[in-house]
Structures are given as structure tokens and as C-alpha cells.
View 1 (cartoon, helix red, strand yellow):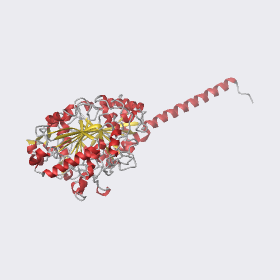
View 2 (view 1 turned 90 degrees about the vertical axis):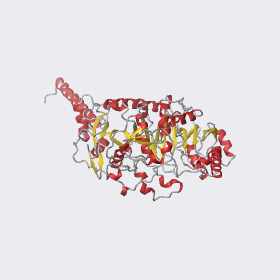
View 3 (view 1 turned 60 degrees about the horizontal axis):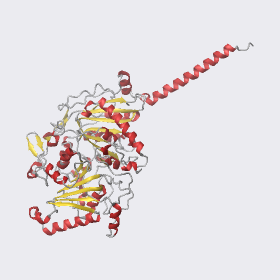
View 4 (view 1 turned 135 degrees about the horizontal axis):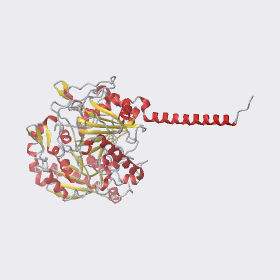
Length: 610
């Protein structure tokens, strides 16, 4: 047999090299294709990538407010989607975890019945909450501070009940809010001027505030012009729709009460806390409510109490209360304040202001002599459904430095980050997160040019992380409710507050503590991956639909396989939607689903799309 020639060997070697190189290229392309998600049935992403040179341009989705419901047709590509029906008209203002009928089955002691009591699985509504007939998009800020369309919250009782206190007036087809309150009938601005003579409101030192028993939140509404953002709360009680009015005005607020459960905020969160005739028995129950305010108040923060029992000697007659009762009430408050090492800075007319000490070590030595009980819980931020205790929360030694005045605070490294108090989050991690979210928000603005316009006043971030989305989108025209899920890997809400932002803890397996139609834009990053196998995705989407205004927008960022499942469910909700690529291109497995809720309202016992 003839031996192979040298030329034959070279030919075989060339063929083998060509085959190996070809296989490598094939498997590289296959891997890239699988990572992009196109191998998982994502026809919408494939279509957009194929038909649009720029993947972040979405031509067929309208973000404009139509008022009369002139919206484009929903994408019908998935005909197998489960269709969710509208709820009955009586559920227009349904708040699942603060339902009035369910509340009355719980004890009234310590306001327990006004706390969160969510429906069991078998009682959940699996339908879409309708808007009332005549509903319109709220006025843009700042006009919304003073005017709310009557059709959006058609409740006149406060116009009668609070007539002489200047809370709210009914004028034609709108409610007007003159800026008054029970304790400031001449207007919130003049009242805030009085506080500013003691509290450094105007220089950025005080940025975050807590308003307990807020009414229609005029205090928070008028603080906004001074660059102070207030988290207001009030129960859903006989003062019908007070929190709903606050949110319709564009003021941050939630349904809540100081009862038996800890407030859903981290320790050392607020620069100032406020009660204006809020009817909370501060001196009762061994001072437990003042101790809870102390937990959420930052060292050096201020507590403002106006109204009874302050200066009772002069005011007991107009208040129509016995002198002895008011005297004891104020004495109890003063005793608790002393145990907490709060220093009274001012008492003038009916306003008293205390300041929490910044020297916790000195305070502790004083408290040791007065048999004060310190809380034993290792984590003062672990508060979800945890009972309040009559104990003082120790202030930890945090070496992260002082907070900067706002707005420098927004991008300064939070003390909880610089001190290493959040496992897995370093200063470098924090700065990288900010850079990443500036890039994401820039891409969002290319998709939806209205993000900068003031169209979206009330914004929610359902899985806020370090608050970098809220920082990147920060504007005087809007505010962000930064929600840190109770099952999140890292407890970051304290750092969010140290940035001068506000937020709340929440478990998205339950309904949020707000009225329907209270947010203009909802952002959800990695939320559905986080809650995968934890609770029903359908329930989370229906809750998003409940709290989103008609013609409000949604941005969901997640892995493509998760978004495909979410997209199928959204096909049964009245949302117009598109799936687009990550701003870094189609090979990134993370995608963005954007949607706009259609305008539709109830019509008696039925619903109509106009």
C-alpha cells in the first residue's frame, strides 16, 4: 500500500482544524442564543430585536394621559391568557388589609382593629378593582396640592366635619384644600414657620419627617416646598378617605396606625416626627408609643407635639376637658421624654418640641439610674408584624460618620454602608449600584419620554434595593415610595432613609396599605424572581393593578424566562405592554417589560371602557 504523501497529511490537518474551529463557533453562537432568552419562546423580544434598529424604542405604546380613555388596543398575541374580570362596583375603594367589615371583628383595645388584617386565601378577590365613574387623571403638581377632582374620591363628610378647621372644601366638581388643619386653621405654611424657628427645616439638616395621624396630609404637602419629604399615615376610620385624599394630592401617605404592632420603618430613619392633635395617647401604656417614635427617630432628631395637653393651663376651657386629666397627661409625657433622654427645646402656645440626644452613651448612664428597660431584640429593624414593647431601643455605635445635609445626602455614602452594617454591601458596591441605575433610568427615559415631565408624581419601587432607582429619577416633580420586601436578602431600608429618601417594609404576598389608584408609575426590579414559589404571581399583578392609576405606567425588569410567565398573565389584565431588550443589547438575559394600564371605569354594577 502506498504511504500517504506529505501533501495528504497537510490536507487532513487543515480539515480537522476547520472542523474544530467550526464547532467552537457553532457552540459559541448557540450559547449566546440561549442566554439571550430567544430559545425560550420569547417571540415579542425576537420581533422587537428584528424589526427595530434601536431596541429601546417602543413605537406602539402610548404613555399619554387621555382622560377619556383613548388607548391603543392591547397586544393579543397570547390568546390563551387567563382573562381577569372586573370586580363589582362596590369594591371601587377596596383596601384588602384594612377592610372595614373585617376590622370590626377584631378587638378595639389599643387600636388593634385599625391595624392590618389581611383576608385569608379563600377570601381574596381575584378580579380587577374598577375606577369610579367619571374618574380623571389627577391635576399635575403643584396644582394637585390644592385641588382634587371630586369624581376620584367622592366623599364629602370631611367638608362638613372639618369645616371650621379649613381642611377641605367642596367647590363644584373639585375639592379644594386651603392648607388648614385642626391645629393650624390659618394654614400649614405659617405653622411650619413657627416650627422652623426651633427646628432646622430650611438648611437640609431635616429632610425626612414622619406625620402620625396626618389627616389629609397638609403638613406634608407644605413641607415639600422646603425640600422636606414627609411619610404621613392615618387609619382608615370615620374620617373617610383622608389618606386617599393625601395621595390624590400627590403627598406620600399610607394607611396605618400606632396600635400594637411596630411601625413598618427602620430604626433611626426620620429627622423629625410630628403629631398635630393626632389623638394618640402618648403617655399611656408606659409610654410605648413614644418609645416607638424614639426607635424610628434619628439621634439629634426632633419630635413635635401640638395640641392637647400642651399648655393645658391656658387651654383646658376651649378644649372642654378637666384640668386634672390634662395635667396628668402632660406629666406622663414629660416623664417618658426624660427616660428617653429627649431635651425639650421649646414650649410655646400649644406647640412643644423635644430633641433626641446624640450622645447615647451619656444618656445610657443616666437611664441606668432610672430603671429603664432596654429592648433585647438584636435587630431593631426587624419589625414586620412584631409587637411593640415598652422598652428603649439602644442606639448602636455606627462609625460611618454624620449625615450630610440634603441634597448632598442623596449620593453620599450612607453611614450604614460605610460602617459595614449591611453585610455584603461596601462603599464600592454602593457606588457601582448608583452608576448602574443611572444607566437604567437613562434607558427608561428613551422608552418613555414622560418620565421627566411631571406626568408621574406618585412613584413606587416595589423592590428598592439601595434606593438607587429613586435617586436616579429624583425630581422636585415626583417622589418615590421605596419598598423593601420583608424577604429581601439584605435589609437596606435604613440606608435608603440615610440618603434622604423614604420607604417602607412590605411583604408582596399581601396587599399594600393604600387605596386603589394611588400610584402613577410602578417599578419592579427582580421582584417576580424574588417571590417565585413564595406566593401567587397572579395576586401580585392584581395588587399592582389595584394601586395603579388608569393610564399609569409599569416597568418590570427581570430575567427573560420570568418575564415570559408574567407576560402571559398580563395578557388577561387591561394593560398595553411590550417587552424590550436590556440597554446593553439582546445577549443580556435580563429584559424589561413596560406597560400602560388602560382607562376603564365602573358603570353601576358593570364596567365600561371609554
